[in-house]
Image (cartoon, rainbow, N blue to C red; front, side, top):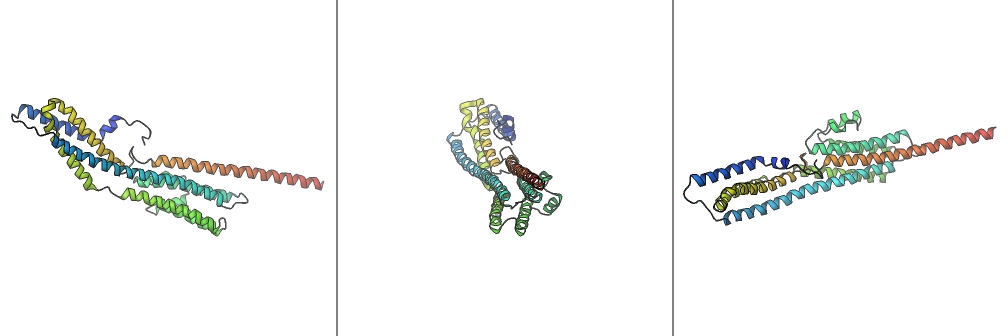
Length: 315
């Protein structure tokens, strides 16, 4: 992700280098043909390409707005993923009954937290059509990895593991029914957010719309030299090339924004967001562990004082 960084001009122009080369070749060929091989005037009123350019501007503005809406919706969904991930771990850490500060309870909470981190990474990777299992090794046990490999939708399989542990905790009376419902509601929201991301990923922007814009844009570029050659002569070459580059850049920007999960610099930064979630969850888990250690230390001191007091009375 090239977030908050200046994108190199080489990268920007590289996206439309073929279009720029074709426009420049066409304009140069037109000027050469017009000046050396044609004696009849080939001028047309500049108002004709101007009207077409106005139509293209409106179409590109509409497409850019629609593409940005898709990109922004994806960002909103991942913002909700951040909030619900924090909520889920907070609920698990505080709801789970652990009066004896047992190692079993500590392992349950740690495994649940790591599994949620794995869910965030796997969701981002699956949206980018990459291996969703590779980045989560070390966050889940081998048994769990084996389980999710049998599922086509890895993030959904991880949520199933969450639900299984939640059911077992309720059966073991570590949480009550109301707490189970609250945590399950959070899992349902995470599942809903996963579905929204998949809808954005799988809903294709109408290809006919893009095709019509491209055809109109090509017609505009073809007609533009006829309206400017008598005014600018050879200076029309860089001007028309720059105008064409501007229109093609806007079109390409809209194409990139309309697909926010294609692992491009303009994408929704799902990996960076997952890293933030990991840091937050680990900090919450470490604070819980620190509290656990402090309470254990106080408990040991109280036991030692009690033993010392009993020994004193015996003597």
